[in-house]
Amino acid sequence: MTLPTPSTLLLGIAVESTIWGGYAILFLFALVFCYRRRVDERPPQAVLVMSALLFVACATHLICGLDAIWAATDVGVQAITGSPGDTVVPFCNTLGLLILVYRCWLLWDKQTWVVFPAGAAALLGFALTTHFTYVPSDPDGVLNTILFMFGHTLLLYSNLSTAPLIAAGLDRLSHRISLIDKERASLLSTLAVLIECGLVQLITQAVYFLFVLLDHPLKYVIGGAAVQIYGFTAVLGILRTLGHTKLTNMGSEAMEEGRDEEVDQALMRAFFMEGMSL
Image (tube, rainbow, N blue to C red; front, side, top):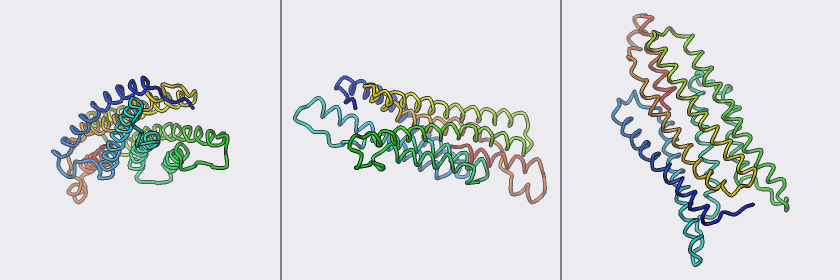
């Protein structure tokens, strides 16, 4: 295993802190944006909790990087973080994937069987890429390395399987309810946002996995950047999908009076509020 040099650590922290700065601004802006909306127009509470937890995890990884630099540049100081920084990378990756899985779960009317393979792959991949599955009877580390690589493969599979489910769920919804041109354009725009965020996270995963597989020294730089990108895309998804949630909420009254068009409007609004404000 290639150990990071002080110059590599400095480069990594410079890249990571730059991305984190933009991420922090977007995160605060998203909080203000959500707070200024009515309660029924805010993202689901689970999404807000996961997004906040992801932000804390990304900040923790940045602190671990600063601590590692301090220990590497001062011979009289020992790092106090140890391996938590390495654990935070797959944790942030998994949390970002679970947000995508949650989107799918809402899109498919909360049918667990649809998203179970992707969700299980994300959780198992997290376990395999951390020390939770360490095999002490493997002195050469061959089995542990295989499990580690298999864990990264599962994380990639989770992302690859989730994106088509999101697209299929949106297509299913668009055919189930009638939409006017403006609403259909908004639906397509939301689809583009989610696929875009998923692809950015997938590319980041693949690049980081490649550098880890090659045991390249720059994997520490890529890992730090990847952590912040996972959080960045999650917040970007919140902001960009919240911009498409201005449909009228007349669901209960329309349902009682049997007005089909207003029922469709209410269904569409519920979809954006609960399914796409992630």
